[in-house]
Amino acid sequence: MVQRETLSINATLPPSPSLVTGWMTASDGARMPYRMKGDGPALIMVPGWSQSGAMFQHQLDHLSDRWTVIVPDIRGHGEAPEPDGGLRMARLARDLHELMAHLSLGSANLLGWSMGASVLWAFIDLFGTDAIDRLILVDQPSMLLALPGMDEEEIADAGAIFPVDQLYQLYAALRGPDGDATRAGFVAGMVTKSISPVLYDWILDENAKTSPKLVAELLLSHCTNDWRGVLARIDRPTLVIGGSVSHVPPRSQRFIHSRIAGSTYHEFDAEHGGAHFPFLEAPDAFNDVVAAFLSAK
Image (tube, rainbow, N blue to C red; front, side, top):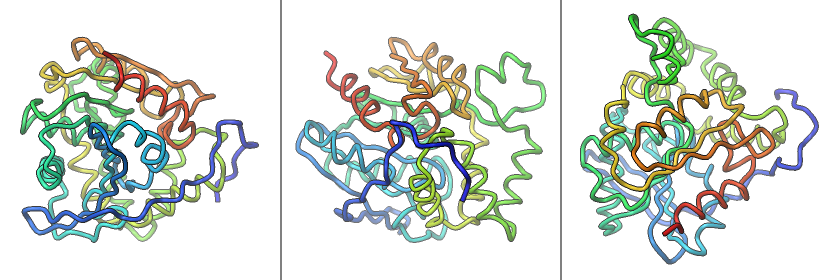
C-alpha cells in the first residue's frame, strides 16, 4: 500500500455501493448494469477509464433528493462482464444512447468524468445535443496525445499529457505481467497526498475488477481521439470542472471552458479534493457545485 500523509479533514471512507438496479443489453450483446436512485430530472453520470460506477455512490446518495441519478458501469468495468469487443469511444457513446432509450429518457443531464467526458464528446459527435439538458465535464483533456508537429502552446491547451512513445509504453506495460502494478502506479498520481489509505485501496480494488488487457485496449481508443473540434458545437449549458493539483493540467480545463460558449468553470483546490477524484475526496463540496449548476435558472 502506498504510504500517505496524515488524513486531512477532506478525506472520506469508501462509500457502500448500492445494489444494481437493472441491466441493459446493448445492440451488440454486451451487458451492463446500472444503479438508479431518486425522483426528478435525470442525471446520468459516466465513470472513467478503468473505474467503476461505484465511484459515484456519494452522488447517488445525496443528489437523488432532487434528481434521478443514474450510474452505469461501462462495458467490462465494475460489475459488467468483459465484452467480446466494443472498446472504442464511439461504441461507449452508443451504449449511453441505448441506455437512455432503455430507460425511456427523451433527454437527461449528462456528467462525464475523465474518460467519461470523452464518451460524452463522442455522444455529441454522433447524436448531437438534442438529448442533453445540461452537461458537466470533469477533469478530462480534449486531446491526450501529443503528436509530432504540435507546438508547446497547443500541447498545453489540449492537455496532451502523452507523447506517442509513452502511450505505447504504457499500453505494453498494462498488458504485461506487471499490468496491475502499472495501473496502481498510474492511479497513485491521480489522488491528493492526503487521501485516506483506506479510500485509496478501495479505488484500486474497484479498478482491479477490470482486466489489464481490457484497460490497455480501451486506453488506445481513449487517447487517440482529438475532441477539440467538438467543443464549439456544444450548445447546452455546460459546467467544466478541474483540479488545481490534478495530473490533468488545469490549463486544459480552462481551454475547454473557453471553447464552449456560455460555459461555467469551477476549479477545486487541494483542500477540496482538487486532484482527479473530487467526488470521492470531497464529496460534499463536489455535490454542492453540481447541484448549484443543475439548479441554476
